[in-house]
Length: 311
Length: 301
Image (cartoon, rainbow over all chains, first blue to last red; front, side, top):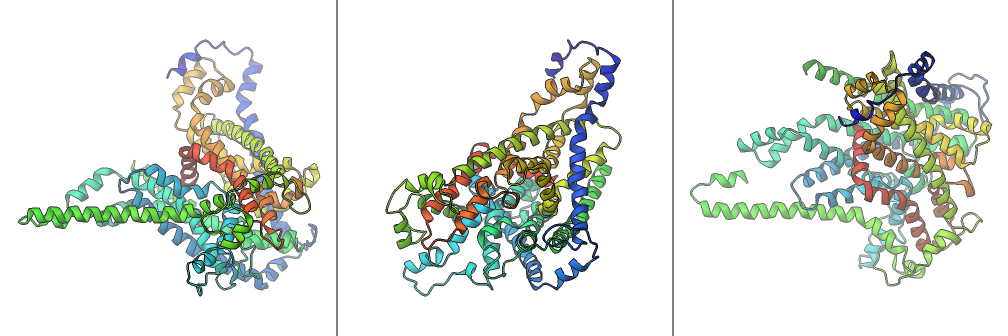
């Protein structure tokens, strides 16, 4: 409240003109951002949507061809691989990072020494870019110089670990690296959730003689259930937008085995000059995001209303 | 632990069993933590060590091995002399590009976000909540949607292949995030404070400068850290809209590691990777608390 004193000595508004300007000020300041956001969200999306319905190839042109680009997109084998990869990656990535994240959160929650240090270690991959992570892991996966070479150096000469260079398994290399990068994030959210649970609940369960395991299973985890959903939704979002990680780790290869939708869009737009179909693929990415996010945001609003109604 | 206590008659034995169990659980907890910590730290350690090792030694013993040499040459080469695609200036230019892109974009988007957040929480008007929701949609739009429109706009503004074009993109893209952060923080500042100030005759700017800004440092730090790391680490726009000497460091790193000569210069590449990772890592180490706060807030809301 000490700030209050600072403004007691303010002079009265000088003129009606200034007063009117003053009342319009919020809108004047907010205006540019509103326009920019509107253009960014609606005009850009509409624009790309229109390009996806046009016969654009090397440059955007505006001859209307209806859904032709979408038809050829879904007929394309590479696009099919891309969205299959997306499903596979999303599933393992979300389950994997949440499982590891939850385990780490529970471990740290056991009143361990040096909590801050452990957290710092598990979270640092989030500070560095996917480019850095992908590059470094591509070296570790490299059969000649990386993990395979290390284990063979120990004497196990038939050991084989060439995930990233095998077209059938390269997607798992992407998954492992993705989980490595993202588990700390899940851990941070779960830990924040565990800490926010009412301690009286835990104490009551302890008095009843419940084991630690039972307390987690019956009390703590159900209480933080909304966090599971939030983490899953955020991770799906990341998965759908996955681009940098693959670009640095496998470049979509070997062959086209680790193509992702985002890689496909980039390739069609800027390498092959098929802008129309690239735009169609970008719109499909947006559609995938909407399928996840629209129901989720409705659910969040519904829950808030319900809580507000009770409170 | 609880069932051991049930055994009342053998009090002493129960106590030792409980103690042993306690020790065992502690052992498992710390054991698992150490294993995971190793998994997380080894990649970093490998890169750090290799940036000081001799290239021949890496070729002989592999990437993951204890260093038998110590040289600083790789850092110098990565910074100023290594050749990427015909120009032999190392990463320094790209590093500066990233700074020239990240600092203004972070500063502008944070400032605009603070103003927007202030208005959307303390100067609400009819429809302001709906406008806020529309701005929020910007958080979810994938970059791929905006590639073609940006290409057109940057081309017409004469900003293609320029760091300033990237600044523009990151400011516009960042506004939704910074507004969200600041608005949600300012909502918790009591409205009475603002009302009292208005009664005393303070206007829009004065309230912002004298009341809001002095209370803002936590959220401004969170926002700056979030924007800085996000923009520094961004790759898609960098690789699409710039080339060669204009590229930010992420795009240059990919170009560097892809430039496949016969011998892979892991020493130089390791140093280059660390140069690219260092600014956000340092921010993380010194502002970790705020970094995590940004993550959880950005996620939950």
